[in-house]
Image (cartoon, rainbow, N blue to C red):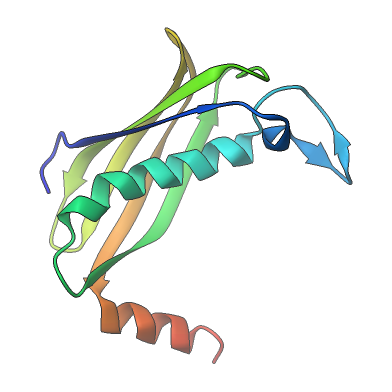
Length: 127
């Protein structure tokens, strides 16, 4: 894992990605929550190739600034760049673009632990 590592994901905005509340589609655009999902996927792709055997990552923070709409049918490219690392933390800066237009920016933080620690965290979540 190095600062500057990059991962990308591209997708086309589909009908299922539109914001809907109580079953009603609000706008023919990519929802903020779907962009957030894509941000998570892209940041995970930046992390996974660098995990050692017996390690796993857990997302601990996600921020997103939704700056412009990505219209139904448009292609969106999400780029996640590792900007900071330490013993157990990986921070990625994320940008979503349609062509040259920036539609969203944000940051995602993942913590890396031995798998046993992750399993213990999950097991203790309901106690």
